[in-house]
Amino acid sequence: FRSQQPSSPVEAMVFSDLEAVCRSEAQRVLTTLRANRRFGSQSRGWRELEESSPLRHLSEWRFASASGATGLLEPLLRIIRSPEFGGPATCVALEAAHAVVVALCEEQRSPIVSASGEGS
Image 1 (cartoon, one colour):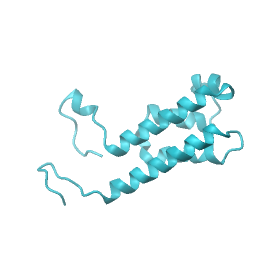
Image 2 (cartoon, helix red, strand yellow; image 1 turned 90 degrees about the vertical axis):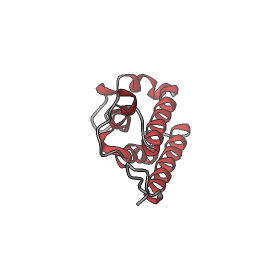
Image 3 (tube, one colour; image 1 turned 180 degrees about the vertical axis):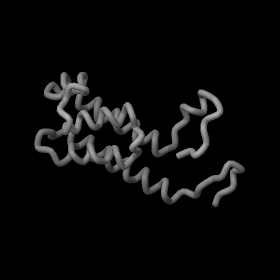
Image 4 (cartoon, helix red, strand yellow; image 1 turned 135 degrees about the vertical axis):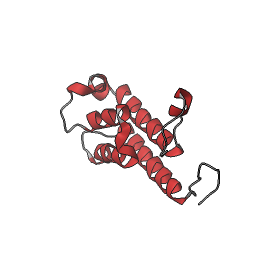
């Protein structure tokens, strides 16, 4: 993640690989849940869902992703463990959790590049 403030609006929209993976996976899980009749109507009004709902937490993360990748794993793991979700939702949540963990590991392994372009 960047430590400097962006100098232009375009630069503000640039995401790290980890951020891009997290945003993509969160959207993919929500899209799968919306395609399911059981959760389709619930996911449209996520603010009305009960506080403990994994759907609500996933939607909140998507709109205010200040908690980062580890914050995304919590609602994904709750979907995976919950008997309320099954089949395609569990499969997509598992795939998303895997992609986030791999992205976290890759970010940890990649060298940090300074502003001058030199690795540390």
